Length: 204
Length: 180
Image (cartoon, rainbow over all chains, first blue to last red; front, side):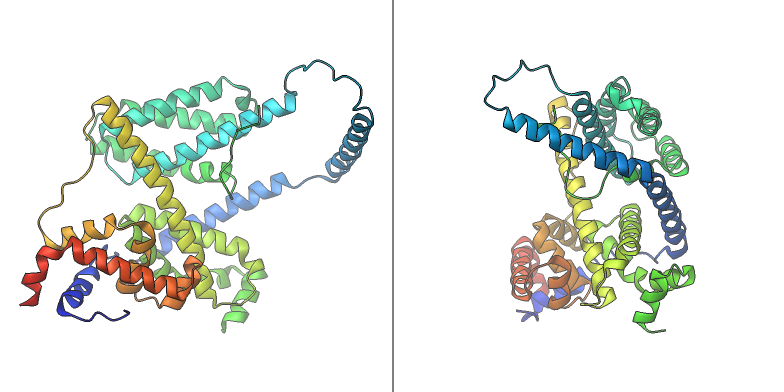
């Protein structure tokens, strides 16, 4: 069934070859962006390199945790103490995951927005994302300076989109230019870890 | 310079080799992304993401397939994931718009062949559309498609056959005109 066997199929293939006919490849523009994105990621990785003292600290903490685990296991016959709520670390992790999910949704929205014109659907979604962004800014997720800066950037962009007049292509272009110049999408993508989607389920 | 030398130089951090590798493969990756998205900005985004990932992961490339095939597998995965996210988002947006009384953005296809064909291709399920575009539009072999999508060659052939059958049904009213 690899080759078309009738005139209809031949014409179908002829017509299909014009489907989404690509323009010339913007090689240099893309290369500039790739080089800049790679520099950004390298820098982010460099900042995330674990110092030796921290590696030792993590090792010691792991040994302590193992000791506590063994202790609890050996004393499991005793009645459990009353639950005192989630540990501070669990709460911070949950907020961090929620922020990451929010970034992922916003990245998809902004990617979609950049490729289309302003229409009422975008304003509606921007308003919802703006509300979530502001909630995030008031949450412990914003204690992290890097996340706070990104959330503040998103607040500005989403507010612009939410308030922009539908169909105003000049305004849309200005917003898209701002997105480009401030590198909002690459920063969002850097903040979203690669791999399967994160879930906050069970974190709290 | 042969491919192995090029890869070795890129792994050693040679910027000129990185650019040479990019120049060798970028046209096909961009065309692939553009054919599947129909959008220049998205195609640029996906092409960039493909090369950023490819450079990041080049250390793990074992040479079991040609470098081009490996890069295309990354590109396909980037485009598929990106389109899935956008499709989910648009579906949600359309639902919200309907709930809010905002007219949806669904385009009405014009009775023009190109438009009809474009719409018919876009209406194909993603797994059929991907194979149809890669094989019939871009000229990939079933072996390349199988590697890129992680499916057997036979599966690729079966999907192409289903895609063509669905297009035939969708464009049935052109059949009489085309026979002449």
